[in-house]
Amino acid sequence: ANYSDEPPRHPALKINSKEPFNAEPHRSALVSSYITPVDFFYKRNHGPIPIVDDLSRYSVSITGLFNKHIQLSMADIRSLPKYDVTATLQCAGNRRTVMSKVRKVRGVGWDISALGNATWGGAKLSDVLELVGIPKLSSVTSLGGKHVEFVSVDRCKEEKGGPYKSSIPLKQATDPDADVLLAYEMNGETLNRDHGYPLRVVVPGVIGARSVKWLDSINIIKEECQGFFMQKDYKMFPPSVDWDNINWSTRRPQMDFPVQSAICTLEDVDVIKEGKARIAGYAVSGGGRGIERVDISVDGGKTWVEAHRYQKSNAPYISDGPQSDKWAWVLFEATLDIPIDAEIVAKAVDSAANVQPESVEDVWNLRGILNTSWHRIKLQNSS
Ligand code: MTE
Ligand code: MO
Figure (cartoon, rainbow, N blue to C red):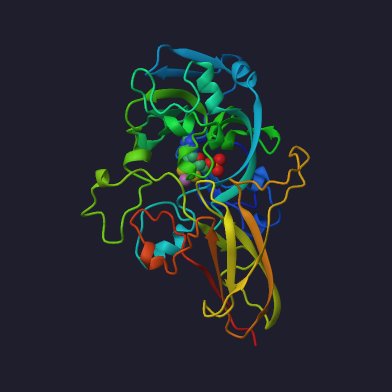
């Protein structure tokens, strides 16, 4: 591993691990705009950032259970219709630090900012696969392929020096409505090195781990990818399973993320005076399920008020339509009377009426993933 050629990063990011580089913005940065600026978008890596410096020699190979072996250049990919999809990418480890306070978990610590909302520009994977002869809405190829594996250029120790990889079902990959992209732009700019230059996968509504950066090849395979991050990581275990009784094969790789929300205008240690305060944050759900409601409490969850929600972009590269961004977060806000000894709580409800679990103990798992418990902030008393 060689960390001597890392890209420059914004000094305001909070670094959770230096090598590999894992960092998140401060809470307040997340609610300053609907679209997260690239500089403040969390960075989650498992090895050094690879350098792809000669685009004319870069290509994605597509191999596996169909009748060809194809190399697609950037020009081939750019010749397909370009889509701009606004989608929230969230690491499964978001909010792990709080979970680790219940009982020790394994993994990089994250506060509540291991997610961001970006407009990804690129070709739809369904168009790319059609170009090479796999029809839209296929669930199996003529030779029995059922999954689409993405293999990266980077190298990581979990894969014993091999590349990061993962897969999604062929059905999702060939479904134009699933909006899976091979993205070369982020927020209207060329994708930068940290986020996968020159080309990354974006799988909307699914944990960030499946959105492979620095794409090298796409393989059509029979079974889901056997890589570390599919089989030995990013699986949700019940609280009864620990490292001495874990059996990885009993669980499926996590795909969609559950309904999540967090308050971004307060830190855990904040002192605020009694009186009115603006509480704002984000809410998002996986699988394209929208946010139906966000409830806020100032008394630890005894009583609730509904927050105002909004999705809005002033970015010039997004056409304003009546429809909401189905893969994107909503931001919420409420101005509330804050009592002495307030405990501020947020919980969101998604369009399928799924609601965040009340306590982190109930969802504790040894890998510390998917902490979607009610976000609580106990304010220090100032009076
Ligand atoms: N792709 C590669 N090649 N290598 C990685 O380490 N990390 C994954 C995913 N894709 C990773 C990767 C994880 S766990 C997450 S959460 C997202 O990328 C983070 O994307 P970002 O750094 O652009 O925010
Ligand atoms: Mo992640």
